Amino acid sequence: MTTRDPSWGMPDDVRADFEKAPAHVRDAYLKWWPERANKASAHRDTWPAYKAAWGDLSKMVRRALA
Image (tube, rainbow, N blue to C red; front, side, top):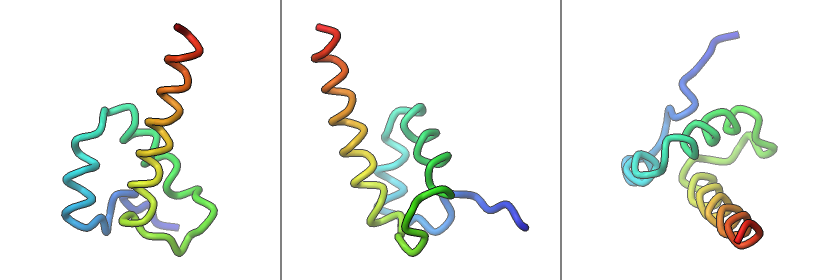
């Protein structure tokens, strides 16, 4: 089995957006990517959804702690 960079194949526009995200969000995404349920999905489809869900979760946690 070979180990491949999980960010391999990111289109340039997705990579540019990915690089703007906080380090902990990027790290979580790269850990999640190899384990994703739909192995046929592409970064261009999954990164925007992952980032949006992370933002929603972050808002919910801030509200709960306020």
